[in-house]
Every structure is written in C-alpha cells, then in structure tokens.
Length: 111
Ligand SMILES: [Zn+2]
Image (cartoon, rainbow, N blue to C red; front, side, top):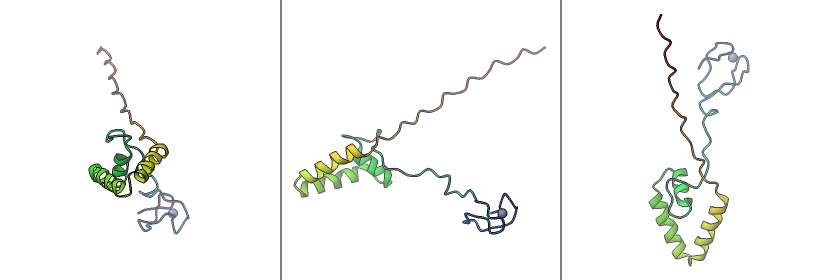
C-alpha cells in the first residue's frame, strides 16, 4: 500500500504511515458494522430468529428449531420470556428503499 500523503510504501495492514504518521483508510475502517436486528423479511412471529440467523449467517430454520427445542426442554417459560425480551430489545432491521431511477433529461434539439 502506498501512503497517499508521502507516497512511500507501507504494509497493507498499517493504520498509520511509518514515515509521516498519516492515518490510513483501511478496508476495515469503512466497512459497515454488523448489528443484531430483528428480520423483517424472514419472520414467523417477530423476526428474532430470522435476525439471529442473518447475524450469524446461518439458516433461520436451524435457529428456530434450536430455539423451540431449548424452549421445550427448559419448560417453555424461560424460552418464551427470552424471546419476548429479545423482541423488546432488538431493533427492527431498517428498511432500505432503493433510489428512484433518474429520469433522462430530454435532449436539446439539434440546430
Ligand atoms: Zn506517509
């Protein structure tokens, strides 16, 4: 990686230039942080299991099966209470609205 400030070669993982001390924009600094949300697209009740599945990048059916089995094995109440608490605490996934297509301006008449 080349420092944009002093144009010297530095290691790719460097956060600061060794020579001029300038902070480097790494691939990690601009990446969006992964947050735990309730899913709006993959939900059976409130989207808690769907949100957990999206967070851990796994199948939501597996998360639901594990949740139901753990709930049944612990006497239903603890699993149901944890689900309700997760429903209250976890924010809903913000809906991303795609930008409207830009209308092409009519061409100026040729003279
Ligand atoms: Zn530098």
